Image 1 (cartoon, helix red, strand yellow):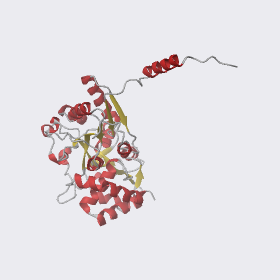
Image 2 (cartoon, rainbow, N blue to C red):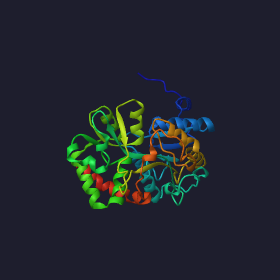
Image 3 (cartoon, rainbow, N blue to C red):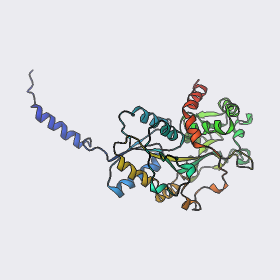
Image 4 (cartoon, one colour):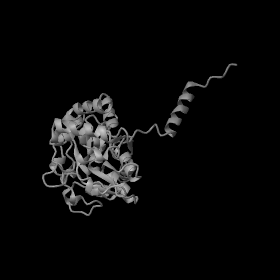
Length: 339
């Protein structure tokens, strides 16, 4: 049966109306790739939209591929960038992107109160709102005094009873690479080999937290934000800052980072968004949410915090060295943990 063809102009008009109705006709004012937990970051970004009237396209990542998935997208889109701002939940991959020419130089005025330790000398990225790598311990099952150092985790008596995320993404990958820079090759490989042999490896830090809070495992590595969510929900857990004694290694401190992409489609709006994220108000808000991020602005140093961060001894690390080693160490860790 023959069908009457619709006139082409009318068909194109109808298609255009459908696209507009679906929201496809309006490009965003700024696009952000965000590895920070969506439950914390999305309300912050919605407030920016409210204050400025700008429309933000927010691209988040999954727990399993946290950070790495977004970094890979940025690298693949080099010749046709879609992203304006990268809000990373750690620092090493951001440093690596800067070293490889993906990030623009931008010295936000709101970064003035953040210590130089957490700022790129070339101003391609800035750290803010940090977390720490800590032990989460189920207090119904373990005395926290038995879990004070990183080597305790690989003691044979805990074999099969503890957990760590596989060190291939996110802060666990950063942590592993950091150990190479502070402990050296031999001791780090010794530790990681023991982890592989004796510790339950999971898909992410939040998974470690859930296994421990629910009593399926006794204790393990996680980040302060995941620990605090379990705490505020009333689970029988406590937090240990590892290796905090005199002469010990200390606790790894990992800031979020924010950067403008070098070929950002909307560079001016990108700078506005970076200024907003680096504001004192945003750091304070992030510290008050369940993620309990740790502010870096000097003016917030003595502000009340949900966690006893005064007890923490920070590990002395060079973030630039960690970032520079990221690509090589990632390949090495994949060979070690994916066999």
